[in-house]
Image (cartoon, rainbow over all chains, first blue to last red; front, side, top):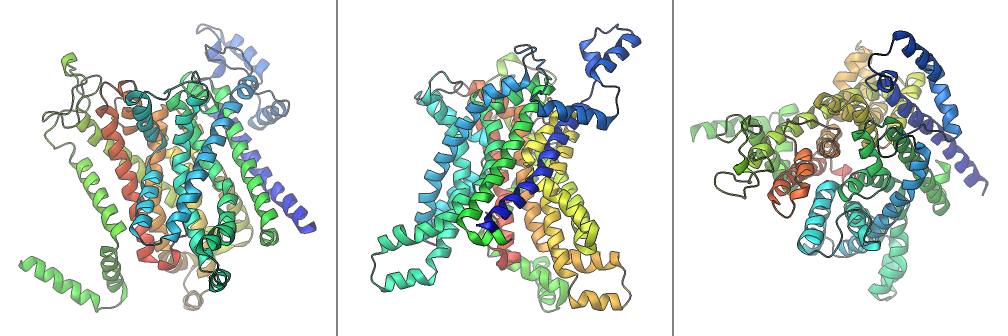
Length: 313
Length: 304
């Protein structure tokens, strides 16, 4: 158990620089944004003295690192500044984030469920029929689904289910649960392609092992060999790479939420970019980056718990 | 006929010559037998050819100065192969001009990523020590940070333009190349021929570029091809979100965005750019996957 604890500590320390990089990039965003924020809020004919006074008041006259330090201190207090967008003027960014985050998490959770419930059975199916036309068909599907940009897939699903069949709502959250189906499906399908490929190669690997041959030679029905013995071992590496999936889901969520007007963090980013509301953009990027970093951390620790060999690395 | 025959003769003489020429002939003949490479390359060649020929092909301008209201939302016809959009512009012409933008952005940003990655990766792997420690740390930081998010943040900060999209993708994508190069450099520098070369008086730079780099060519080609596909995805997504290339430059992501309100009335506005976008990405992915099997069968299954 000691080696697990030490692994968790080592792995957590590794995440610290990435978190710092995230805050730095986000800080740099506001620092480098073209245009002077003070000029933007003051009337165009304001005097130099007035501008200077305001600069001093907000600390814009101070050196770069001092400003960064102040930014970090405010961040620790949960203060991400205030929104300047017309609809949400003067709302705390952190408030907006807390409001929108559950929507994004909901979308990702259902997307992830869809992705695994398609990818795992399909990968097993494909592996058991290696090199048959069915296997090749599945591989072509994964190639196309992987290449498909998520916004184009979203538009296709929207045309099919909302425009032509008219069975599912195309945007917003008015339809309750039925509203989340299309965005979650869009998010899940692309990742299902990756899961299928992973599951297929993992299954092929396991089926070649000696203990499978041994079970077969003892006369165990093939069904039992696959479902009871092979699957358990093959599924492990697939589920533990959930960390890699998180990066995909974060990028996908931004695009998919925009396509379907799903009011989560992703849509908040695109709206805020359009409104030049950079404090909010900053906050969103930071939340999503933290989400990826901690997701990876969590997945790695999970992996170390199920597979003791990892802890030594 | 005679031209073809002499080409054949050249090929035969190459095949038996040994050295680099034989390697090229070998790779070409193995590629021809790999269906992924053939299909992928065919798609890419057709799309690149159409993109290059866009200015000379007899078709409507993608950004006409004079817009006719009666031309708008016209369906697929002989005059407009892909129909017209909500402003009456020819979708076929805009798709081809959009290909130029996408391919330009993708190849340039992957080229820049490749240069950053090769230089940093080689330096880190070859020199080791403190240099390696610092560079590897930087590589790992950028590798962990989700590249689409970084590109989005950069593009939003720098302001939407073609150059900034290239910059954003280059900065967020180089870490993969650097990791690859570092790993290769680490193993190659221990080889005996490197030692022999050093004994003959070769300097660091010479060893890096004549021994280490050629050894990494195979995985680099594979990664670059897949990288172009990823870059096209990122570029079109950024443009779709409104932080990429700006109108009037015709671009696939922008066309798909603007076509969304007309899904029922005029589905061709989104369908054609979408299909070509998918085919282009698919082409580069197929080429990359196929080349991996051709160049080094041991790498099979390395990518997820």
